[in-house]
Length: 242
Picture 1: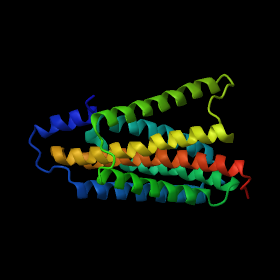
Picture 2: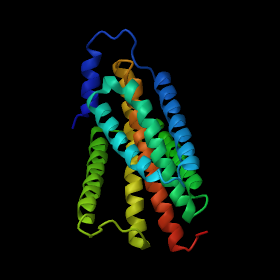
Picture 3: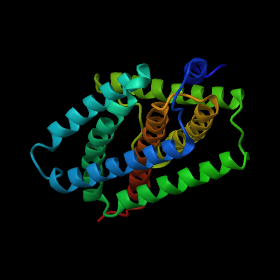
């Protein structure tokens, strides 16, 4: 199954590109966006976590984040304008969420950040050394698993509206599900690394530096949230609360 994003890049490479995307440029964008997200998260966690406005900012950030994600995915050429905004609003969301977890388990967010970073480095090494090769089969499997997780979350949201929760939030089963979903998020990093490499190889337009950096940031945000949830369940199970 061909990657739709690579089809777009392939078409773009047939046109004249005065300034194509580079690996250095993409890494710089990804690093910068990550710093903006972290700064926004720290600011919201410190100044908004205990504020009555926290809930409103959380909802607003989530809505704006979804809108900017959709715009970026369907209009990649707008990525240089949409991704900084996404980093700010998503960072605010992460800061408020992390602060709530910190109230229950002090230090949990720092541990989650560390594990997220370690996971990214591990997946980068596995990809770079080609221990795991991103073939079309591997890509299809990861995309299918990601789709399954998305459907599971969607069904759970609909079911919760009627008072039924499918997503376990504690116990061995909940932890097992958490590990699986976090694993799927981690494997998506392989696709992000491969997409960046192919975008550069295809000579994609300069805005693909932001587009690919956005894809990587999106996965890191997802992975961090899943690790945070997983740690919360593990700490709750073993009574490691403050």
